[in-house]
Amino acid sequence: MAEEQVAEDQAEHSASGAPAGHPAIRWIVRLLDWGAGVVLFAMMALTCVDVVGRYFFNSPLSITTDYTRLMMALIVFTVLPAICWFEEHICVDILDSIVPRALVNLRQILINLFAAVAFGFIAGRIWFIADRAKSKGDMTEFSGVPTAPVYYYVSILVGLAALALLLNAARYARGRGAMSPPPAGSL
Image (cartoon, rainbow, N blue to C red; front, side, top):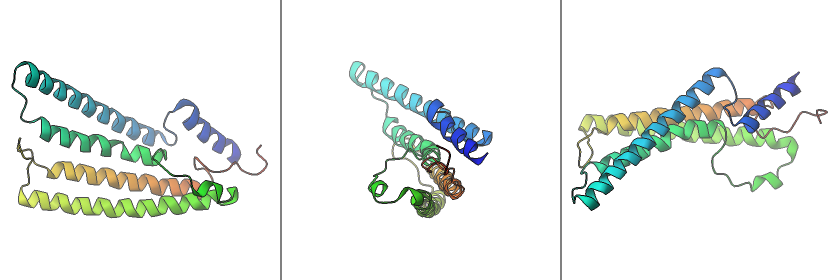
């Protein structure tokens, strides 16, 4: 029974590309992906308008720099929890040839726990920066957009990424992670 569930989870993620796991997680991942897509489209449209204004009318948009910076932060950090959940981040597989297959789950538990602690610390620091930006009334250079809400948003998403890493560690502890070796006798 457990072997079948492991195979189903791995097949669901690898074959269809669809988010694996609980329906709530799939819903959250899709929502974040759509949000990043909308922001990316808005950034593309803003850049196109700025380029047309700059080269054809000699009148660039003064807000482009500020909004591009804000939107880049939104795009990068909006997809971060999904990247952590599916373990699609850039990795160097130096340990893969050294660690025996029997210890893959332990290795992945330790890596995910270490990364979760680091991301949790980073989320706390960003929240501190957001509080400071809010108290000082920090705004963008050209358009005067308050920066604190973006910092809070980034902090929450880094916190969600830390949670995704903790959930990954729990999956590996149950032997159901994406890189978990198949249970003995299932081949």
